[in-house]
Image (tube, rainbow, N blue to C red; front, side, top):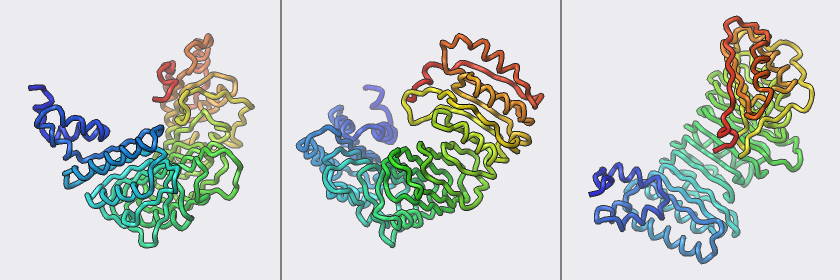
Length: 402
């Protein structure tokens, strides 16, 4: 007997749940024991090739309907739909209704349609058991007035459209326990103004890389007193981010956009975008309680490189309060060692009186000046006598995002 056949049904179902549904079905041919176990998996993952023809999609659709009929698990934990250009509103509506009837807890739908826009069925907006909802692309949210998602804790909206601003407001107000919200506005999706008033929200990510035009009316207003993590990427600095009240629990912010934080203690700043050093000055001046500062690479790019500062860096008008009283950890990954960067490092070390650790990682493994850069780094004056200086090369494997 093979080793895998000795595993319990619960463990086998957990393993099968990590596979695409098409691969799960094929396991029925392995042995008598496997003949029916595939019908009990708690996760269904249907994937349709984006380059498939209409005939291919018709066969895929039959496969999905057949599997849902044969699926015997009384509780469907997760339904994943990744659909190509031939997906239709009727199909997706039917599959969602079946999932709701099976008491699905996690729903993830990414689809592209060359037909009409994809609308979600009304039953989903008043479904009590949904805990995770992740939507992407050709989906339009037309949210009814009676929306109520009392169990929803995670909501991801990636390049989806809202029917109107009222739909956006209704959706968020109907999620009283929401803890994580991800909003990708990179395809210039509506609404231009987004109001986040979610008392329970702890993690928020906003991405906007739309580069055409510069609409001064675009803004995101945040009123989330329980927020602990904020990630904001605005490539063009075209939008405006407003914080309407303090967030006393905020501990981590990864920012590529100007914003003020009176209680921020941990900041990670992307050093691969335009005007990032100006943003650094802003954040130092606007974060009086800052304790940890990390200058990192930028996630959206597959090839990671550190951007040289192309214009003179101007130091803050006055020494930021965080440097004088709170900053204890400073890291700079993919450090170049150019003149303006040296000025920034020297300024931070010269004024950070509570600094305990400072570290740089060089990004260019072929840099002939590497020994000189490290020696110069250690020669900078330090306001803190307890500060430990660390330096290393950045491994070549880290030049690329996985």
